[in-house]
Length: 215
Image 1 (cartoon, rainbow, N blue to C red):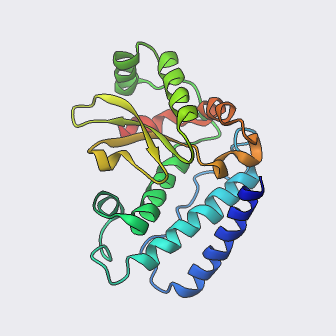
Image 2 (image 1 turned 180 degrees about the horizontal axis):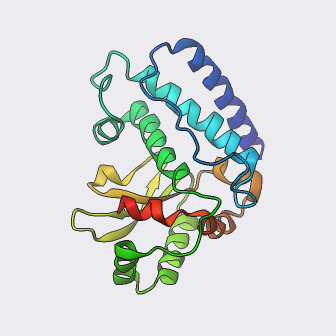
């Protein structure tokens, strides 16, 4: 818990510093399509404010600073993720990951996917319930910090992909469709060390129309 608190303090400090030093904001913090308290009790207002307003803002500011006077200065976000490495990749990956993450939720979410996405899930895992179990197992089984993704290949075939740190399926030639953040800052204030409980609750706020449109 002390480590988590220290990471919050460090991130806030870095965010403020980046804001003071960055006069060329190519990328901007995405605006949430819902109020900060709209996803409660699945995700609390406090977690949203810290996760979106501090953590993601920090990644955005860092990325803007890092790409200045580099080959990525005028590149779009997906290109940076595909072609960069090191610190630039870490921050670009986290910006893209979080953009996908926060925009896949809705206070009116839940239920099940429909249409082509539902058919593709059934084809791969037999049922939506089987898919959810496999997805949750992948998320709980990922060691340390990272992401678990539902991704598709160029033929529309789905797979579950585990990525460490700021990784994204784009680097494997896949398209991210749905992503769960398993960094501690995504759930610790609300669920402490119960990552599995957090992952189970997230299904209640998934906007399947948004996710289906990505497929």
